[in-house]
Image (cartoon, rainbow, N blue to C red; front, side, top):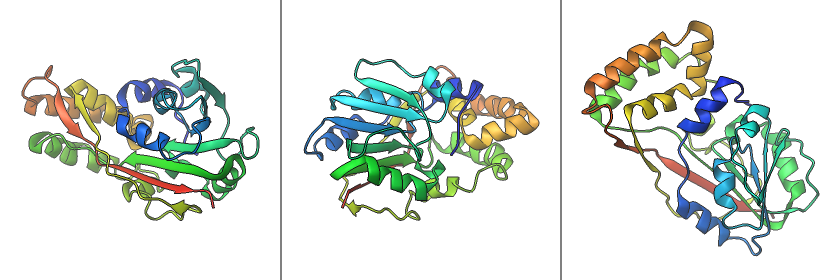
Length: 246
């Protein structure tokens, strides 16, 4: 499973968008008891804090110690460090299991076994993510011409699962219908570049060849941005898949 460690955890924490508030309300309405929820691969706790508004207790885990070290404390959230495929949670413990933008990194055979062990009968499984973002024609053109070609050889194979909205993954749960949720952010050019820098492929290229390509892309993006301090609305295509334990 992918681990965001070191400097990248700081970038990840400040750059990644929070998820639609409507998602958490809908999720809370799908469980018979809003007792305990597991936020698997919680990162810095973006979803964990929001889940705490609807559940009595949030168990949040991540394989990365540095991510957990950056996580936002909350009285209802218990952060732990271990892989999602092998946890220390009791059997039949959770009313719901959630994964935000991370399922593609898991060893799925092992993870499904663990979910079926810790999730209550009839419990809810929900995963979600986004697979791109759009700003506007001139800004999108800069990214597609001056960033993406340089990253093509650095994308991990598992990223393709995310790009296809997890449609290539077999879920061992009874599927349930999910409403459409929209994910929009208002970002400055600096926030947009932070987001690009947080991509796995960008981090791998930086490790390999340095970040000159991002410095150049930043200059080009600023040249087509109306005002570098003005925030633009960013659309991130958002998807959710959900099911119940059989």
